[in-house]
Amino acid sequence: MFEVDVIVPVYKPTEKLLALLDGLMQQTLTVQRIILINTEKQYFDKFIQGRDFQNRYKKVSVYHIKKEEFDHGGTRNYGASLSKAPYFVMMTDDAVPKDAQMVEHLMSHFENPRLGMAYARQLPDSACSVLERYARSFNYPQTSRIKSAENLKDMGIKAFFASNVCAAYRRDIFEELGGFTDHTIFNEDMIYARGLIDAGYLIAYEANARVEHSHNYSGLEQFHRYFDLGVSHAQYPQIFSGVATESEGARMVKTACPYLLRTGKPWLIIKLFWQSGCKYIGYFMGKRYKRLPINLVKAFSMHKEYWK
Image 1 (cartoon, rainbow, N blue to C red):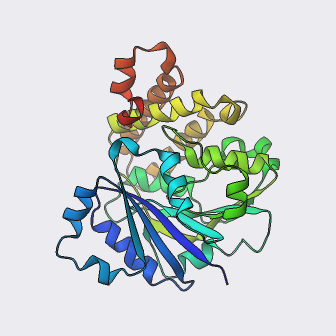
Image 2 (cartoon, rainbow, N blue to C red):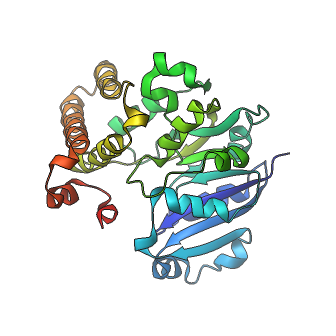
């Protein structure tokens, strides 16, 4: 039996956090501890006021940090340091387990000592747009698979695509590799995943481990998000150079158009091209952020705190 803790960075919690915690409390593979790293104590205190939170969630430990202390990689490393379990699951505070077998399915590959990470399938929630639903099915298919460095040639960036929206890690390998890179604007999960396979370890995508997690980003929000993606790719050329990146976006557009026609929604093709254009321009500018004035960089970025 695996001993597993769950670590969740939290910021301005919503009802989804409670749905997440309720789902974790009901897992068939028992979670030992749930560690919340909350940014700004006042938001959390206001949210739980009158909810009898401590009695309802006895396995939950809450640690508070200031907004200026938050870092995508460093905050998760801090959460991992608070756990002593040999395995831990990283989640975001808006990812909700789809069923009681999520953790059990996520841990199913760890009998293999070379398996360092396993990530879950992300499903759209009930409010998800048609285009975002398709993007979820494109990035998180129905078929599970194991990935290694050998897949870099045929899969490109998909060989180390892995999201810590919901992902399990083996502690000894995590510590051997030094955990997540501190002070990253974005993509700390994929930076770690590339290091994992480069070191000879394996990544599992487990389609039966499912969480509801989706966003209905506008074109402008996609621009900001993909600008930061471009920044991270520019900052870590040793991770992202030499593998296909832009081609994945083009492939999604090519497959989405027939899908929209088949499902009787051809008018959404215009929106698809608009959002895809916003993504591409954001990514293009982000990769060249060093050439831009800092005020423009801050304006284009989604994670503005990073630049302070």
